[in-house]
Image 1 (cartoon, rainbow over the protein chains, first blue to last red):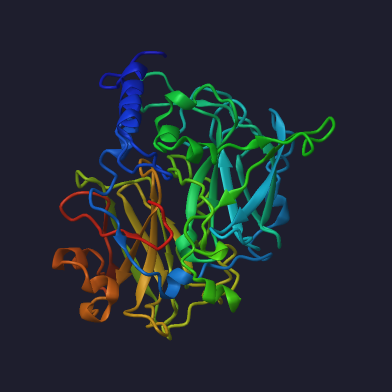
Image 2: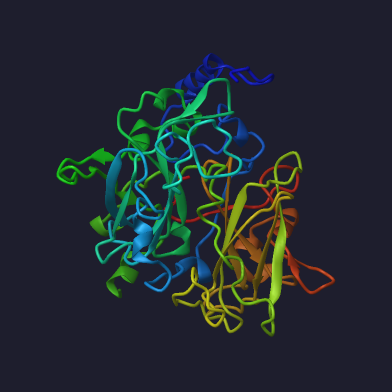
Amino acid sequence: MNAQQPGLADQATISAEIEKIQADTKNGDPQPRRNYSPYRSSLLRHPTKDLRHADPEGAELVAPVFGPADVDPIEADLTIQANGEPIGERMSLTGRVVDGQGRPVRNQLVEIWQANAAGRYIHKRDQHPAAIDPNFTGVGRCLTDDDGVYRFTTIKPGPYPWRNHVNAWRPAHIHFSLFGTEFTHRMITQMYFPGDPLFSLDPIYQSITDQAARDRLLAAYDHDLSQHEWATGYRWDIVLTGSHSTPMEQEHE
Amino acid sequence: MSEATRMLPATPGQTIGPFFHYALPYERDHELVPPATPGAIRLHGTVYDGDGSPVPDAMLEIRQADPTGTIPEVEGSLRRDGTVFTGWGRADTDTAGRYSFTTVEPGPTRGSGAPFFSIVVFARGLTNRLFTRAYLPGTDVDDDATLAHLDPAERQSMLTVRQSDGSLRFDVHLQGPRETVFLTFPGHQA
């Protein structure tokens, strides 16, 4: 069961690589490094050439539109999608989606997916021998409101092992898929929980080399959002990268 | 620099990971138009890694104009009823690294250069999303500001290739000698 797979590095090797890259980094990168060798899957999947600068035009300037016909409001509650209550810590999760200038991203699609409380995904390729919860699929969608606010009810995910190296465990996280007001805003990211002991060991989290930027992926516990005998509350705001738009264009909005 | 142009620090992106398949793909996600629609074409290809091996856990999305050059701003991309062209679609790669969209050819948009499909690529192992463009075959590269600045091999990586069945092929090479040109836009930090 716990047999070590040949060819996999141990945690000490991975941690030493993480530390060396960090030490060699003068100013941290605000976005993850695409070439990040401690994350082994990035080795053959990162472009080697610099990204080319382009002025967005045409379809890049217009985000796809989603509306009430696309998303059922019950999709925002991941705890009512089956016949019974999922196991784990129920949590209310909310926050705002804004563009680079702080303007709310209104009526736009937010999609999430996550492991269950035991750290298991409902995915045929997830062979982690942890319990499958028949009452939890770990998939949710919602639209932001007029203030750019999203809201989900879900279960706090557990950490889970993966095969990047021996004894590799992902910090507990929820995947977020986001759209902005332009297609150039499109992004997918992961939300983490404060105080996770796995952060320093995890190559995916550490692929962001700027600590302030890493901290932007942490939700905050919000006691006012917690509900008596019902759910804990977490808040996480999202700033989409890089609006191209000029002040002149803003005035005509 | 005025307040209006000062950017808030952006939330970092992260990899889509290996387990998105039960969450993001949905019924008819890759059909921007039903396959039997007059004028429908297939935009398809394979995603490759630096070894030239197919990438079976990638996901692509396209955003595009309709044949008249209009970029739709209408609902209906997730609950497709087969009548509304929303100009957006999503396709995950299969076990052979292949993706396919059923769509229509975009027309030139007002005030822009050559028509293209705007493409965003996600994959396990790819720490942040990548943007590129897929231009139509026969695009006059000198008429397009982005293509004009590329060398011939780089231009080739952004052109679709017409297949004998009329479909458009666009392979994505994340790395390697045929590496696709990926784009960054003003305001993007990395």
